[in-house]
Length: 503
Image 1: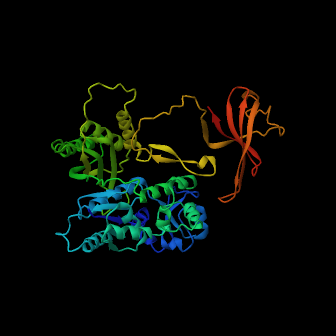
Image 2: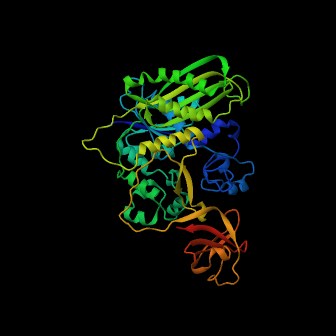
Image 3: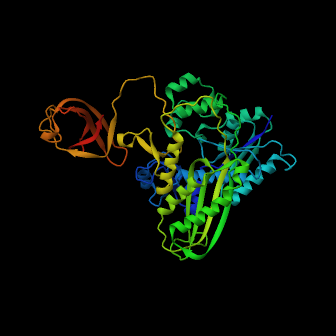
């Protein structure tokens, strides 16, 4: 049976943050989903946990427990770039590396066929741990036979290397792993603990049908994964080949078009070999070394770094130059450029199969991806986002913005009925109060805005466990003009507010 190893870099984004700020290691430090008082804590270090700060808390709540708390975000682009870097390091020890799609910092690597290179699998694992430790990353490594078993054991063990002798030993050891080390919501851990379910064996013995009725999809997925209902083959990530070229300029250059022309010459030389290898460019990083010391010190040079991602692997120099032009236009060069360094990552391009009949499509998703790539190149990586629903109490907090990497074709359901859409205001607008308790006949927008002819409510949202006490009474109101509005009465502030409109 083939052997595999799980490399678990516990709390990977937190390790990245502490690597950027080593002076924070001895102080309470957390990683937030958004750097705001109501931002949610995703990871907390040991010093923070000693102050009873846990993942799932709000930033404001944690500050009340530790005034010297250090907190920051770690962007998805930083995490993805670091994952690619770790994959490159792990390929020095095995050619096949698969990073986890759900949990950053978890990697599986092929451990088969290494007996002639290393004295034992323990020696091989220690070499990996030592290599990562030199780069400031702590890891736990378990060599076993399945992704689930090695992952569960790596989460539960201290920073060391553990080699399993057979599949039965792996199953027995994984069954004893405590549930509190697995990535589940805090509410799920509390409920499972109350039911006396404290190990993976206890969870996996439960019937899936009952689990679906009472627990979250994450718990159900862990149950199915442990029972091999979600088994997937080992899929190694193909390595991204990095190509680099530098150009030293005789004189400091500030003209955009001349810089673009120089970049075009460098790209022409870098892209030429890709045709023979069947590869395409997926990202491009430009480093502009400035003549004067006007920027913060970075690695001994005054350097401006800009990273660009294409919509899909490509070798079209015109498309790449267009993205470079948009990014350079957005820069403000306070001094001349004396050196240009271009680095690009490539992967193998998949050839498209020609169909017998041409399929007519009203939307070209590839053209949409190219348009999004232009927006990212001009305004930055974080400008193209989509709304994602989250479980929150207040309506304005029930969604968050996530980066949109690719467009997907919509899949409308079979229900052809038209549904009403509720559009929220970015900030609720204060309304004039009604003259009486009866809302029928009320003119919230003045006499020209129409009067209320029908309303539905109240729907109460109240609580006091966040920054301040909240008590809102929501109503749907139809006006004589035919418009439908979503308003609420704030009992604490004794005022009415418009929160949205129904279309």
